[in-house]
Amino acid sequence: EVQLVESGGGSVQAGGSLRLSCTASGFTFDDSEMGWYRQAPGNECEPGNECELVSTIRGDGYTYYADSVKGRFTISQDNAKNTVYLQMNSLKPEDTAVYYCAADSFLFLDVPNGGSFPNGWGQGTQVTVSS
Image (cartoon, rainbow, N blue to C red; front, top):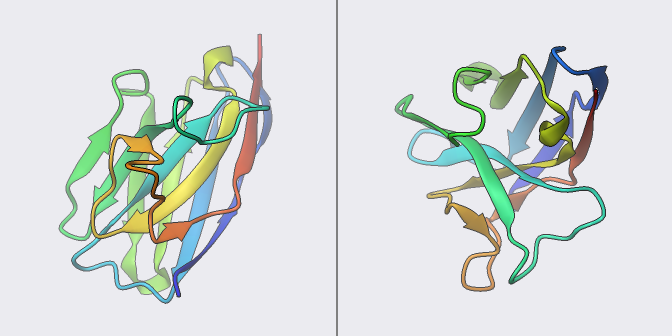
């Protein structure tokens, strides 16, 4: 069973920075993908109101970023610690969301996808950016 433990959320003013961490157990990162989704506060990730994929990183180092965060967010991995980090700089009020860590062999752009969630799904961490 894949377990993900997230940390690092909080409240900042616009222009500030936060770093999210996600540590995985029961998961081999080498041939898989880890990343972050987000959802506006008060909303669930559900059909018709899917969570947005923010960024991913694969075991081979390939990374993906949503257009809305390119140039501001950086995803990285520490294989020895089985941990993925999301460094978020120049935060904007529209980045306010609950951020979910995810892990699977492949991560889709939206969750749920076909009614399914990734094998690994974190509990979510709140990020609030005030103007």
